[in-house]
Image 1 (cartoon, rainbow, N blue to C red):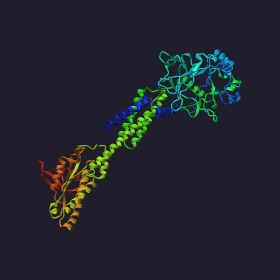
Image 2 (cartoon, helix red, strand yellow):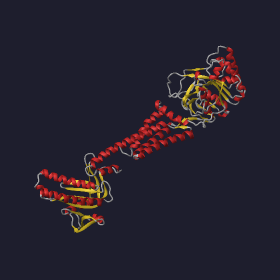
Image 3 (spheres, helix red, strand yellow):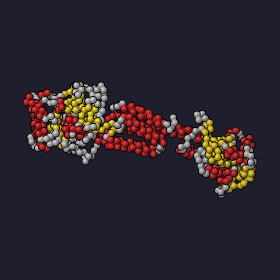
Image 4 (tube, rainbow, N blue to C red):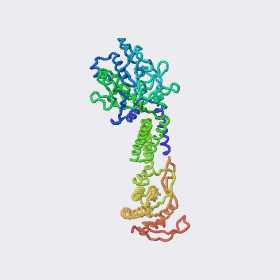
Length: 615
């Protein structure tokens, strides 16, 4: 697969998988983790938590239970407190208690009924009971509605549902603005009823039955298919030891009932009256209180303030979210493909930071959630897959280059080739190189007096000497030519001073040959010497052959032909160089001009020189 298209293909495949999970609403651990990311955005410092002081709570707490005795209490007590609050100028009172059965004392219900008729802004709860399993995740099927006892005389406009819907992890993040009754009419949430008591009429939250949307003023509230809206939280959890660090104003029911609190304190406020004791239950986990649950009364207060301040959050359009996942995954894939080493991990971290910053800005500027988890999974998957592919390709290239060049160049050159960005493939490139041919002089007469084993041993020693010397001077062993050797300098690894490297290698070979000649004469009575030809210039260098079967790295061109002819002109123990090599070496090496000599294949004689040594 082509390196340039691989990141794009991987980004498409990853987006296809993640997009299916994202748009399909996979739920499970993915949704739980996604919610956890979003919860972080709701965290506030204590200074940022500003509960609305128009929202008051009168709580049935441990102090009230101690003062007034065991629960439940006569309903006339709630009626008396509600009547007193409304008379003092409260905007609305919600009695957050399920009053499902008629009271044992009929006068109890009669008293509450009278107060509710007198004050239409006193509200009582309705609770929906749902089947264990919902048939459709986009709607809510209701099994029954538990309404207040008819004996308290609550009008339908004084009812508000109190159902709070937990997410899969048991945390409450959404307010269901309304639930349909048996006739399909919408019952607003108790929080909606109380919020409307503080809102001007033109800003009140209403259900548009024709358009099937909830409207606040001239704005459509962004709900899901179940008419749920994500809310903000302004208070912390209540701890019986430390108390609430920052919460809504709350007073004990017993203090209000017994007149310890001036009723005028509640003028122009809305009041939530309900349980606030661990013995009475009704506690729930929220994004801001994972260790200490919030009481239901406090959750309703936060819901009311979210509605008052329009602090409800929406999901980004799914198609826009999908595009974001693709772009960030593609970015991670491309960075993994084109960066190397430490830069790869820096780019990985920067891409994560970029995506998180985009999510942060979307949330705080537009109250919109982006798919945090799915985007991060895309970044991680793109990075891992492309990095794994790149590592696999590099291992294959290393194996290929080592196999191809390990016979020709030193290990250091192989390492340099592996670090190069130039691909190794059939074909060639024009390069400025130096070509050297080496041949043994008088080897045939010597071989005639030796056994085949001795001949092979001498030949191997000679070839080993040539190979080691060429490698030591950064050269490349091109090929063995019987008892001759062809080497090139300046390819495949580019060398600026390749002529000097070749000259040094040639001089070292002549010195080694002199020592070897002495050994040979002592052992066999006959010595051998080398003839060396050397020229530099432009040649086509590369791999010739089949990529799948066999390739050989070599050089072709006039420079190669000239160097081969020069080797033929070299006397034993001499180094003959061409005019181009002489021009580059004359300032640092001692040369002896041979004169103009005709070479086979050349139309004009060439000026040749002998390389004697360094200056």
